[in-house]
Length: 254
View 1 (tube, rainbow, N blue to C red):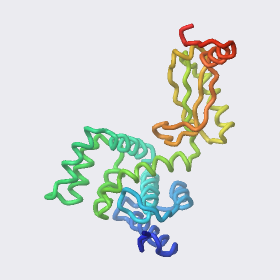
View 2: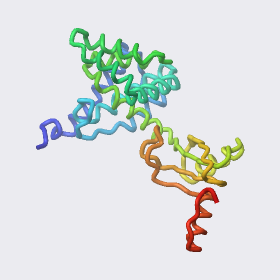
View 3: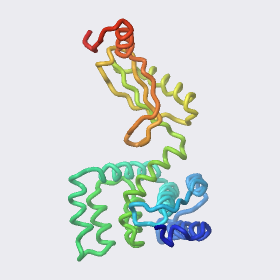
């Protein structure tokens, strides 16, 4: 059964999301402005979808608005790089069992206020490089949206790759690649994918014997999960293919 919240007019949804952004852009937060390129990009990409999300925000649009506001705050404070590093760290911590176990003691303590829980979370996440992210966590607590932190940081990273048109590419080779080879691969992949930049991740895979494999089009660009495209130019595959054509089975140890 569809809830009343998901059926409300699109105009009301847009107004609610814009209200969230305006609150975050007030001087009470970190002095955000919309004049920066990051803020303009955030405004252009704000999208609202009337679906449930794990943050408790309904519809899903406010998660995007919070993520965009964090990016705008980072840009206005000149902390885009440290905030991105902090976001990557927090995103990783939410997958760490030890961190989650300690976090439960903080968020499930009924004697601690939401702001107090936010302070405990920030302390548990230390060391952090930026001043913006700790303030943002506290802001979420004041808005009673502390549980939204995980989906917000995930959205932040996904948006980073989208707005800056950065494409992650994973290369596996039998031998370490030279810097010239890495640059050549990056240039070829930029042209192939139409990307402004390539995040090249190189791994050594001795079983390839020689040559390399290239993977891209990841469903999860941050963790390089589930590549949807790739090219195999390894000697291992060539030998296996040649062996199959001869009706025999080849292994990497031949």
